[in-house]
Length: 434
Image (cartoon, rainbow, N blue to C red; front, side, top):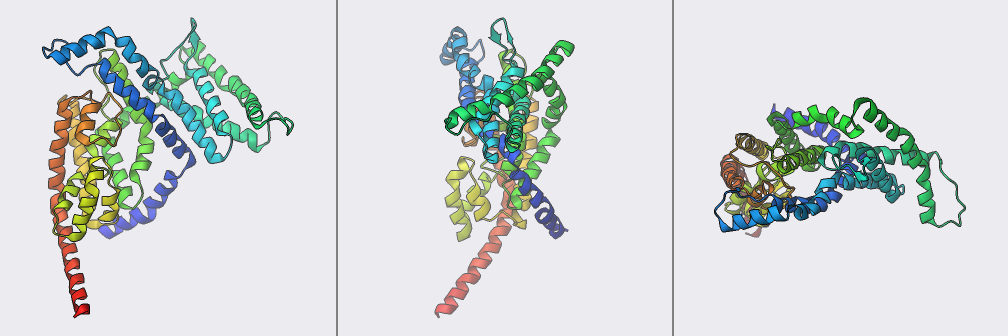
């Protein structure tokens, strides 16, 4: 039965996942998010200064000083946040179009600029001389994905059919590129913009608001324990088959992460309860401690192994694992297509997800309000993501102990197998030299 399951993964699931992982639109969305990541991390970091991790009635001198400073300079502190994380959809819109255009080998920069213009056209209508910023953050993520893809496909359609303004060969290339934007920009204004105006005047909503309403049930479903467990299982099953499951599943989940994070930050600014649990920091610092499979505990076991092979992998992988990088462990053990380690590799992160979910839902630990670099050590990243709530870091330590207990019996079985192989190899070498 187990052989049939592994054959199904290798022969059926792996080819589909491999194609999905290289699909140009999925890759463009993923790379667009990655390109905007520095702005979002810096903006999220500043958010913690505006909302100190101390109660208003604290008697701790540092907390009193921090609360007073954040209150006195709130607008000044929030301005960098508003210009980075607060308008992240603008950066993502340009990034998606740029990367998709590059994959088609068409002019990438004009596509990025047209995508940004189109997004602002429908998401930030000007009123009283000011742009509305309501959909420039997390709530505009799904709109910006659609716009980035639409604009680039429109540019590609026109280029393939040689539709555009013909200029003499003597005209500089940059001028030629700028004139090539005239027709697609006109098409955008004559198609998407009228649709946005129709929705605005007939139903009192903008196109991004309609798109958000369509995706709302999916967002709610994604922010549930069954959905999280399914994503964890799929990610680690792909890893077991030798496919980078984190890249594929993470690319699909990225829009949901950012929407949930944006809604949490909006609720924080409004003084309301944080609505969402499933944000990227929840995955990185509670579910996959040390990397996919929650292998940090396994690496600690490797460092004290009697097997020379596992001990070498442990020494090589311990430092990267602290920073959530575990390719040396996954491919060095190997965990890929290793039936002995399949069960704990999948079950440990699922147990972590379940415990962390209930701890968050019950209010024992804080929900995520900041985008944290996924390479931060787990206890630090977990506390940082929730505005430096130390309870989050303590839960990570508890989860590490649980992961250790899950991996231990399977580690012992695998260690015994390798010790037998090493003893046999040593006997053969001794026989050859005798």
